[in-house]
Picture 1 (cartoon, rainbow, N blue to C red):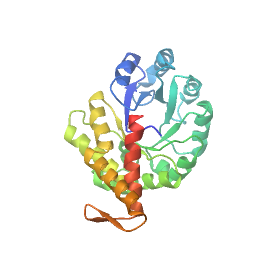
Picture 2: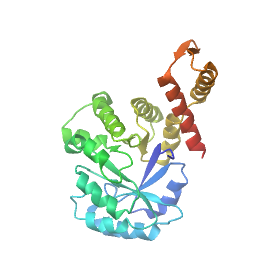
Picture 3: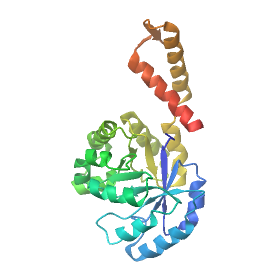
Picture 4: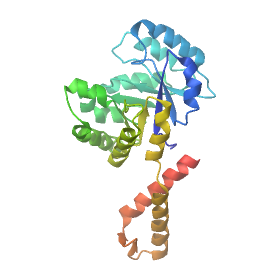
Length: 269
């Protein structure tokens, strides 16, 4: 599967920014019909997006929630070949995901978990038709939960989404945004924490965030060199016990090394 480490938002009301976003190096661009568009501008933004969609350069689309007045009209847009995938906000019901999956005609659906109910339904959402990976909307989640917290308090919820994704045998989830656009140290810390927890990528709200996020989710030169040493040592051992860098190599270590090299190959493809 192609890496999906960085996903960059663009407001649907500003379709002229799509080309710039596509050139920013993100693994995917999400054109946003939901939070980035004022209620009075929804119809105009949808029409502008429909005119801007290009099958040669497909984008993801974040539609409005299933309980919104714009949901039905958003669904009509999803059959366009310029739509690569759909992000469903405030996902709380697998049946809603199934409706979106049908409208998008076999392309991926990414449920956005951003409420207590959505979190409680994470396994059902992960198993719903068409779901490729879950996305954590941690800011809305905190608001729904009434939490006044730092990132540390969200660790159990993030880990649970990684576990649900693994149990459903879908790709690793995508972590939420870092709202501080100019704080590279914070962005790097957020992205590295997400990777350590098992997330596969992170949402971005500005092109300047893309390179940092990609770097944090791409195996480093040291990791790649270690993985190659492990694979070579294991191959040469002929089933016997072997050590690399003073540490024993067993099956889980070999699997980790293989995963690192697979990530590198997938990004190079």
